Figure (cartoon, rainbow, N blue to C red):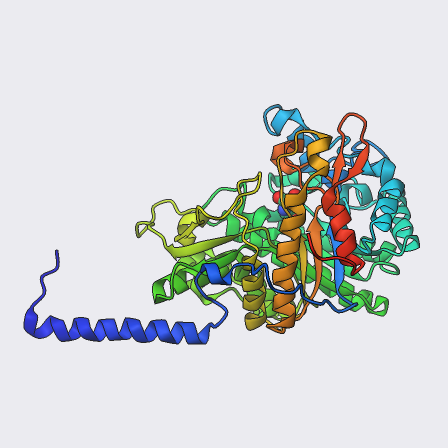
Length: 497
Ligand code: NOJ
């Protein structure tokens, strides 16, 4: 234990305490958006529901592998998920996306359902393997036709398409080249060649593009530690920048917007103390600014990451930084939850670092927070915290491209009674509305995940996120309470639950 010598150390300790106090006040003043969680920042049921401008986009999201099915139809090639799902034990109940919810064959019916419920903004993804079965030319015209038909049906129904180019379903043929296609040296070229075909085929009608969905997940989940997550992220960022450069140089006349979908929770500090605030910021840096800062904040990774990771964090050339900086027209975020952050306990030096020991933050939740069927904490006020954080960091319009909740629904009767999903969406939109109307955050759209129950990756069909129940034997669609409520919100009739 350290001995304190009265004469010399007490003044130093006092000075240290003063410094900490000063630092706390300074940090809180410099980051007014970052306040610790307190009950009085929670949703206030008595507030009036915010008024949204007519231009605000209320929509819903899906992704190809999770809904399409038709895995052997129309000349489609195999994706890594086709292969992975066929290995016993990988997906709950042995589920696969072979049929999924058969959107491939039922998209007309699905578009009519969106239309009937007034959902005028629809985000979906294109399966690379339908357009290019092996990931490279030649182009599969039947795959192009499928998306042409879908996009035309949406537009005929008065629904605006928002399209993601890559939502986890990497062409298997590319993956087999080296075991992880993101790490192929020419991945940025492969991806931008595919993107070019997509822009050329559909860009006359699609005006909002997302290059990648949740690159954080591709980099961190299911990968090893060391430098691998950072190399994958680096490659995805370069591929994103390359595709955006193709779009902006070759398809300028299409007058569309392009971005990338990033995922993050909101990170509350455990208290106003400097070390807790620093932990919340560190969580934002490692989880979000890792991707956001190169794109929206100057072309390079956060300093905190560089200092912590040293050589393990790849470097961009000056030319790459230039290409990355500003390579999106908006910020697009998937948010599902929030956490409370304080310093971590990783020993230094860590002999075998992982992404989590690199962050070295303890992220906790409160026992008073309810949880979804995924076990994720439900914290609507995190939505407002996140939006305030984003607008304090970057001056770009913001879209919430996914937000939603998995509920335990064991029968169609329990599913259609999903009032707690209606409540979840209501509370999150209300917090978003406060960020828009009270905090003046430039947020332009909100998309529910998801319109349909679908294949929740490794959880198969056991996790229900949809506003529409899908029966897995008949594939019948049944709208739930939440979709009726969402319609009334969109129509401006009734916000009350
Ligand atoms: C984000 C992903 O984009 C989507 O594919 C997934 O189903 C939802 N989160 C829910 O986990």
